[in-house]
Length: 82
Image (tube, rainbow, N blue to C red):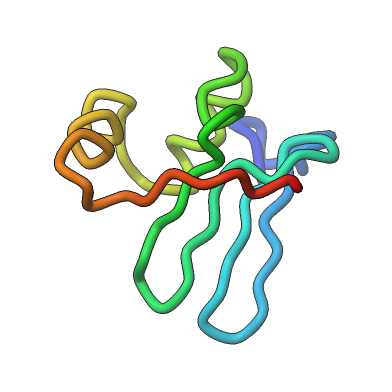
């Protein structure tokens, strides 16, 4: 990921494989977008302020919007790290 300075951010990654994209913070997968379906890691999706900042960038939305989509069932919650 690219930070506000235009430089790569250490330990925050977006991995793309066809229609599938992952957001990874350090060694932890936080979110996956697969053919438009967002799945968040149920244990780590909101792990820290830094994770949240880059998750918001990955999803192009605020935490309020993310929480609403979780509540409505639009976003799936799974253990993405086991």
